[in-house]
Image 1: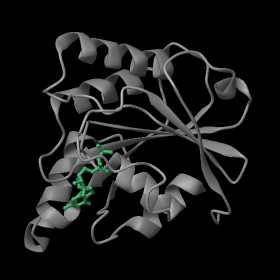
Image 2 (image 1 turned 30 degrees about the horizontal axis):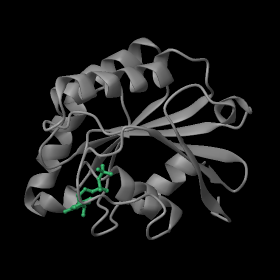
Image 3 (image 1 turned 180 degrees about the vertical axis):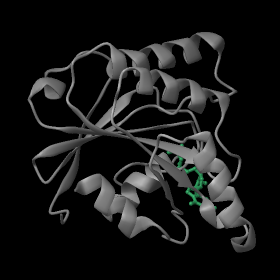
Length: 189
Ligand code: GDP
């Protein structure tokens, strides 16, 4: 599928009619600074549609983008940012849980982005478990694969697949664009 159009619609923090208009929702989730904005921009072939932030953890809202006038990219706030206060983190988690588990939205796919270099965090495991329990359609993207030496990648990929035996994992780098075609095919099919 080609991207004909992609535009930012709005940021939301609660129930909104846009989410109930019946269009499929492709969801992006991951910890703060994992490269979520860069990945969304790369898939859409846009430079700065989704802001690549220099101050991580700033976005405590859900950003909605309408693609080809027919489906949404739903950009959930990045979790696990250590510098946020406990209350801010709780609010953020509640917003994510509300969207993922509290509503009957049409999640076509949920893209969980993890950091290939630092490996999955406790938060990543927790959210994945919750999504699996709800049988949500999850794909894992291991971003920043450029930071792992090519000679170590085979072992690394094996280890990661053992950690997530049920999941499809796509290895990807926003920096080198390795894996981008596979990512686009998988997400937009
Ligand atoms: P977000 O907070 O998850 O939206 O993350 P951003 O897209 O803002 O990226 C966070 C930082 O990681 C930025 O400094 C990016 O340049 C960097 N980054 C993102 N993707 C990659 C990647 O594939 N490789 C490397 N080396 N750095 C990346």
